[in-house]
Amino acid sequence: MRVAIFSTKPYDKRFFDEANQRLIDNGGPSAGHEIGYFESRLTVESVSIAFGIPAVCVFTNDEVDPQVLSMLSGGGTKLVALRCAGFNNTNLAEAARLGITIARVPAYSPNAVAEHTIGLMLALNRKFYRAHTRVREGSFELEGLLGFNLHGKTVGVIGTGRIGAIVSQILTGFGCRVLLNDPRPNQSITNYGAEYVALDTLFNESDVITLHCPLTPETNHIINHEALSKTKRGVMLVNTSRGALIDPAAALDALKAGQLGFLGLDIYEEESDFFFHDLSGKVIPGEFSSQLMTFPNALITGHQAFFTTEAMTAIAETTLNNLTTFERGEPLGLNEVTIDMIR
Ligand code: NAI
Image (cartoon, rainbow, N blue to C red; front, side):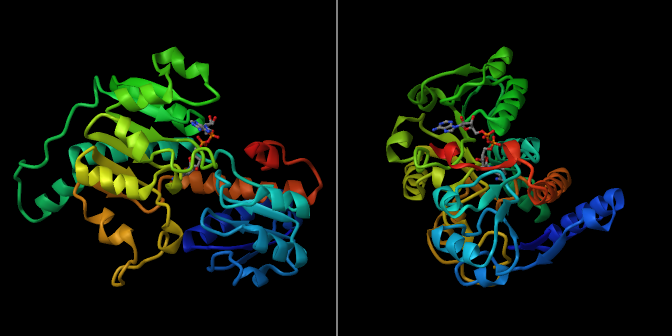
């Protein structure tokens, strides 16, 4: 099947070429796909690249809004294959109306994201980034590096699907008390000691709060001024899920006031303007650069939680399998994103 892959980076090309070659090695030349790689994001301006191509493949910051979908449909595209789990950038109602199928990679490596989440917690708490800079400059001073034991602390996990469940399990191993919140509880997590509580209880009692729910109208700015007013003073907040779960103005206010003691982000509400690009040497606009990046107790990574060899391999393989399944007219099953998923 012909597919236009948007927002391509060299690493995407490497993993997709390798996965496509494996399809060809196992099933002959017709088992592979005809892949066109494009660096630009999918937007209204770039959508014409896909005209005449039956499938497009996009990532988290591509714009699959009604206008883009309508233009894709007009150009003959029948499948949008998301090479990610989240689908908040996709207008499912419009896709359904236009008869465009949306596929995704529901679970490529929840462990990758869970492990990065724990990495952010440890790095913030034990200030690895400050210690590394100091030692490189020949300073072995400990003042300012004081951390706390995670053992015995209470950690609140909001969203206990694939990633949240693994985070909970790892934290239980650290000896944390783990509080969970999810409208669809997964009782198997409670087998190793974690407990489901009301959201307010989680806010009130947690020393660390970590977000693993999808971005939906309901979860948009779930961490806002009101939520932060209910947390313990000095709480650590980690978000590796989607940027808009946190109201950035509320987070900045809470950081300045000391209500938020630590902030770890792998994603940011306005990330599509700069994440995945090298902007060193340029002025980065907005509050992100002017304020958030200057806090000594804020640690930001550029949407890299998924970025492991295992996850990239799984993303490429599942996406190409989605193309094969669609081309054969077979059901995509759990890999299809339907409008019912947001109802
Ligand atoms: P999942 O679908 O397995 O789990 C999400 C859980 O959130 C579900 O159990 C759901 O019931 C729950 N949920 C929904 N609404 C909620 C609410 N209002 N309050 C609390 N919980 C709620 O998803 P998975 O695989 O665990 O991924 C979670 C999120 O992580 C994705 O939606 C995506 O945005 C993000 N992600 C980030 C990556 C990164 O590189 N930073 C990579 C992959 C995913």
